[in-house]
Length: 95
Image 1: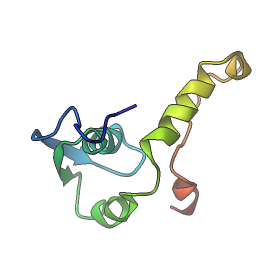
Image 2 (image 1 turned 180 degrees about the vertical axis):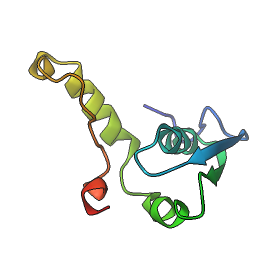
Image 3 (image 1 turned 45 degrees about the vertical axis):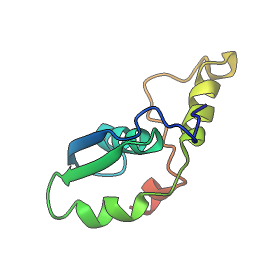
Image 4 (image 1 turned 90 degrees about the horizontal axis):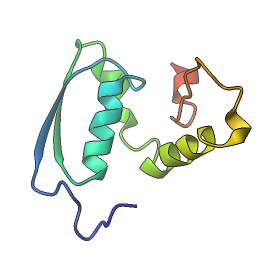
């Protein structure tokens, strides 16, 4: 858990380049950096990507990703392999 009174990346500036959509690794990195207190600037893959990515800034919480990861580490997820687990509040369904 992150100590929000003293974020580990406070005062750090981060540039995340080439965000294509809300499912991209770059988008997840940007979210994580922001959650850890960094000032994040993003560039987008193209002009068409921006309207689909920018409104999604507060769709999920970092804890949502943690819970999904914790589940995947349990024996209940033994048969889950080679799949994409979307932790986006269902946004990928609407796209």
